[in-house]
Image 1: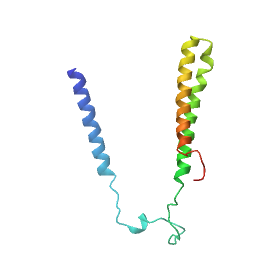
Image 2 (image 1 turned 60 degrees about the horizontal axis):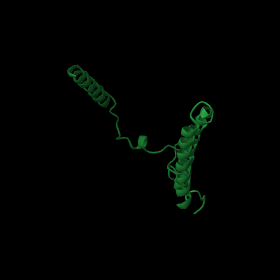
Image 3 (image 1 turned 180 degrees about the vertical axis):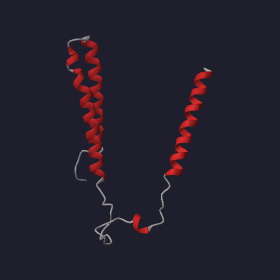
Image 4 (image 1 turned 90 degrees about the vertical axis):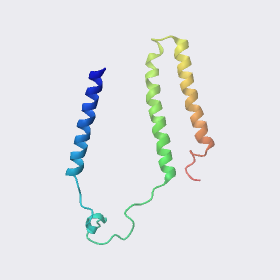
Length: 117
């Protein structure tokens, strides 16, 4: 126990030393106004450098990613159908699909699936 605490302490000290070294080495000068401004072929920018994006598009993307990961979790369930107990397999899959459907119903109920508001 004492050896584990000592090893952890040494690792924390080494990590902090490396963070301090990198902090002092990587000092950058933020005093130059031209370096901090957006560059557009040598001219002053005519519009904002950050264009706004649709928050609704971002939410639809997050929903897509969530369901994409869930589909990747469903695919391994198909080959295991013949090699495991059917009742246990059915209960686990049914529970998983119910969770997905409840989430889909909640998103539909909150009008998150409509492209236009």
